[in-house]
Amino acid sequence: MIPASPNGWRLALGLAAALVLALAAGRLWEAGRRAGAAPLLAEAAALRAAATRSALEAEGARGQLARAEAAARAALRLETETRARIGALNRLEDADAPLDPDRLLELRRADRGLCDAAPGLACRPAAADAPAGGDGAVRGLRPAAGRDPGRS
Image (cartoon, rainbow, N blue to C red; front, side, top):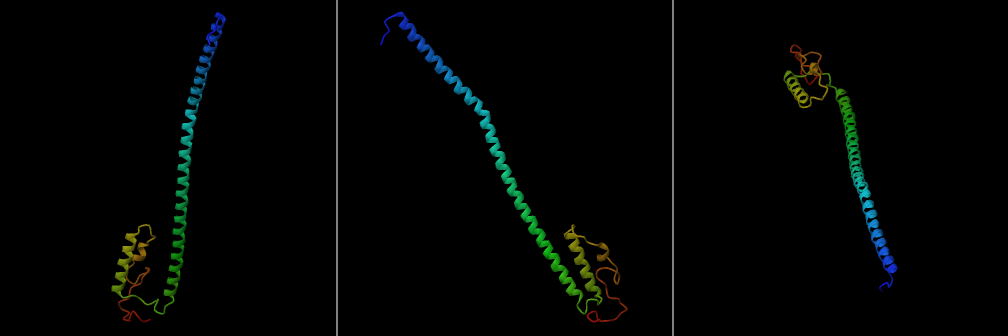
């Protein structure tokens, strides 16, 4: 359809110009909307990564806590059992009998070896290095006693 009058041409050109301007404005608006969303999308991705990292850290902390609790229970169980066995050994009839000097030396070496292997233990050097027949943790046989170390 071809407009017959010059006003018709002006109207058609005006409508075409308005349509071009509307399309250009729409594209600019969409581009601005996308450009405004880009930083928000990047921030959302960073927040998702931080949340994932926090979840992994929390899971690791729960695992570490469970391992620490298990180790504490095992240590308590070991201490309880050790105390019970030491008590039973101290009630034996030959618990107070002095030790043979060779056996005493062997026990002291073993004691030093344990202390060297685990420096975190509360080793008492005075007990391990006490002179024979002294007040150490293990007592030596008094040479003049002349008794059998297995009997009281």
